[in-house]
Image (tube, rainbow, N blue to C red; front, top):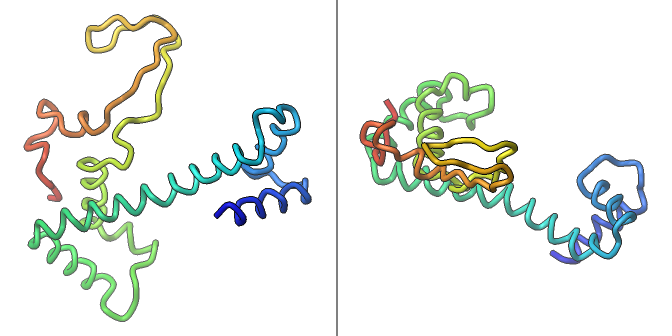
Length: 164
C-alpha cells in the first residue's frame, strides 16, 4: 500500500496541473514541509480510502444482517426487485427510483446502524442553548446519531426494522 500511495504522490508531484486532494496536499507541503511530509500525506490518503470503502462495506453488512434476521422482509425485497428487474440483469442506478422497498431498507439501515455513529465535530460559533444546556462559544460538540436514531420520543419501536 505504501508503494502504491507513494507512486500516486510522485505522479502528482510531476504533473503539477491537477486539482485533486493530492495536488492540494502537495501544495501545502511546499508551504509547510515540516508538517506535510509524504508520510503524513499518505496517512491522509489512507484515511480517505478507508472512510470511503469501509463505511460502505459495514453498511452493506448491517443491511444483510437485518434482512437475514427478518426473512419475510428479505423475501419481499427479492420479490420487488424480481418484478422490476427480473433475473436477466443486475440492478442499475436508474432502477433505484422505482425500488421504494429497497430505498426503505437502505434508509432503515442508515438509521439503525450508522457507519459513523458520532457525526463530525462542530464548534459553537456563539454562546447558545441546546437541550436546556448553556453552550459557550468555542465549545466542540459531538452529535450522537446512533442515539438520535433510536430515540423513543421520536420513533415508534425505535430498535425495530420498519420498512413499511
